[in-house]
Image 1 (tube, rainbow, N blue to C red):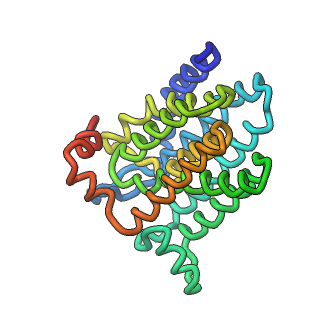
Image 2 (tube, rainbow, N blue to C red):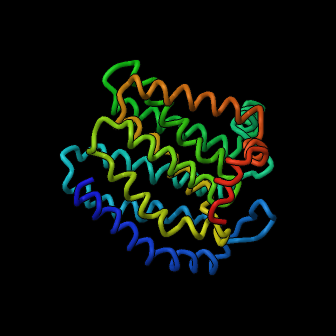
Length: 270
């Protein structure tokens, strides 16, 4: 970690400290509320914070980066996936659950915002993959890694702070297996944002919504595509496929509730 990485983290913390109360007040005044797992009405769409801070903060990295185009690709994808998530937050069908459910509804001629989110998410993933990849194998692997990471955070966004803990865990693992330091600022900036936002999410004072889970997920996906060897990306892809298959068959919440260690980690900070 060099001085620019530290500066990016500090900037993210400072900007988030200023922006969080402002955005929270705007959402409350605009009656942007959602219903959480306890059926409580709390401010929603706080994930907009992630877009604002990442775009503003990483502009600095863009100016000093030797590979400017990839920062533009990341920020473009971040904003677009955030907007699709925001659409789902505002007018999404809450009764349709799971990727399988959205696909079935689409095939029956009853498209949902979740289905649109999944379709657009895959197209964005494929588009980014084509730009970043050098051959057909890389295009396929990168597309699946980006798309599956984008949906991963949404799978765990069922309890306060859970999806953020999953993001931090995967972020640290990705940093440890990365073969370049060029794009670490993407994750460091996000960690700085979460340093301020996580306590709010843990205490259920607000929800980040799909706009938040989408932006966190695509951040992991694009960072993975940019920084990992093809062999490591294939391993991540297989792990993500297994998680998504498992999510269609079992409840992660029940698994966590029935495991003492997982429940302790899940409850930590609440």
